[in-house]
Length: 529
Image (cartoon, rainbow, N blue to C red; front, side, top):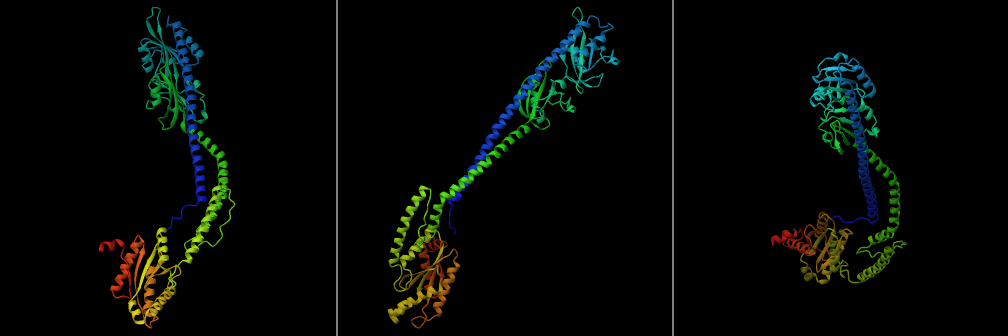
């Protein structure tokens, strides 16, 4: 059975200090990371929200300005849609506004009357979604994106209704913006805050179609599955962390463009924000670690200094045992630790008392006066100490066969010589760490400290064989019967151990003597009885 030696104080304190330092670094890093992440997320949302609101406001103002411009121009030309300078006025208006790729007038039947730069289409009837919407609603509007039947390009149309002098609807004046070419959105959205970290903005129509995106290949793509797009086309504004349609984690802010029913979204990849937080944590750790390592070194040195007296006392205490009174001098210490100094004093008093007790016990009758072996009292102390410490050992109970007849035949003096002969033989045949005792009369006990039972059995057989083959003081052979038991395999207490060993000795006697019998386990013996 292995002894539980426990942990050394110095190692334990050092381990606790190191664990505390590591835990401190981890906790501080975790808290700093979480706070920095929240702070950066909040700041990013605020920047994107301000940007989205500002751009939405600007775009809304531009659309109103565009529709006002169209309405004013429409009033000046609606009196006579057949005048010869009508195209020149549209060209001058287009050049003055710089918003449109083309400006045109359509009558109430949907026929293109005049266009600033589309002469080949004049006279044709327009069936595009923008023209149909303008004719149906007869109001100022910004259309949904559609592919023009004239230019075959994806465009958005801004239009204003035309009325004659009597107020009758006679058509509309419109301007087209080609989404895949240089346009107002690129001008307004060309600069995004923190663009270097992957931030960008895009514009969606009221039906969730991309009108502007830094990746021009995505213009015209429908992205209504994006929750931010769903919110902004519903007229809402705000901020939200989302995973976009391309699977990228984004911090998005959004605002509606009221005059067109569109929405603008400004967003930043969450990973770029998290990278900033991670860099901060690495910087914190870089600055903290040298100071913490110095702290660990100082604490280790201090612990070593404070624990040195305890280490010396422990080493000295480990030399003390029931058979060793501690002949060495108590070590001197010069500790800074008050408790260690007081413990040293108390330890000194305890050692002196221990030595006094040891010397007193040595003066008592610890040995059998006839054989010089340990007596029963000493044997009990060994057994009690080993059992209390959990040390395994074997117990050999020996009894001389027919010893009464030896006394009766040769007298008690010869009988005493036989006992001394057995004692001498046991000393010669057994190891130094075996405890040999005279239990009483012709009965002897041998304690064999070992986890295994085999060494005790080998010793028992060696003793039995020697006695059965060697002439003693009687001039002949006096044999032995032996009962063997093991703690804790055979029994769990001293009383049980002696009982099962005696039972084995009893069997050896009744099975012919001059033999070794092994004890049954205590529970097996109880069941048999």
